[in-house]
Structure formats: structure tokens, C-alpha cells
Length: 154
Image (cartoon, rainbow, N blue to C red; front, side):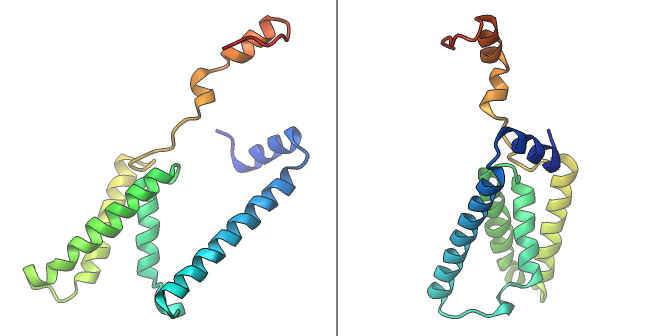
């Protein structure tokens, strides 16, 4: 797989308007993120910079890494596993075991799960799926070249 520099140089050769398209996509994504943040603030009623602690940021990064960052399904699965199963199920630990500081135990459990996933499944639980074009190979291109440039049905 090509790295970002090679991919951007290749895209610049193929399409002279790549930088304009990249800027448009960046602006559109920023606009959507801003609207989502505004809706969140409207929904909860107030906002404070202390709302996201470093521990919550760690939980979100762990969710993306455990689920797999190459596909949106992996990120959703990781969010469900980390934020719902591990975090919410450990909420009952203080009453069952009698622990005073279960929040630290949550971070330790998520850290251990993160280390195990990175050790045994580095791409995450649901890795990135290959593109369909690469599955089919270069057969359509080879057929096009063999017919002298005339289009054939695949």
C-alpha cells in the first residue's frame, strides 16, 4: 500500500484538481463536525472544557484501535465493546467486590484489552476490507488492451 506522500503525488498526476477537492472535503467535514458539536451543546444545555478528561480520550482511542480503524463498522464495534461492555459492566464492581476506586480498574482493564488486541490482532477486530477492484484484479484492463481499446463486457 502506498504511503500518504506517494498517494498524493499519484493523485496529483491523475487529477489536477486534487487540492481543490481535498480542500472541499476538509471544509465539508469540518462543517459537519461543527454542526454536530453545536447540536451536542444544545442537547446537553451547557459545555465545559473539563467535559472530556484524558481518560475519556483514552477510552475513545482504545475503541477505535480495538475495533479497527480501517472501516466504520470496526469503529462502531470497538465503541460498543469498550464504552458499553467494559465501561458500563465495570460500574457494578464497587458494589459486588467492595472496591473504592473502580475507575482506575476500568482503565487497567481497557489497557490490557488494548495490549492483547495489538499483540494478537494488530489491525483490530474488523480490519479494513480490500477494494472490489483489487479482488477482481486487472482482468478488465487486460481485456481492454487485448481488444485494441474497444470496450468489452466484463
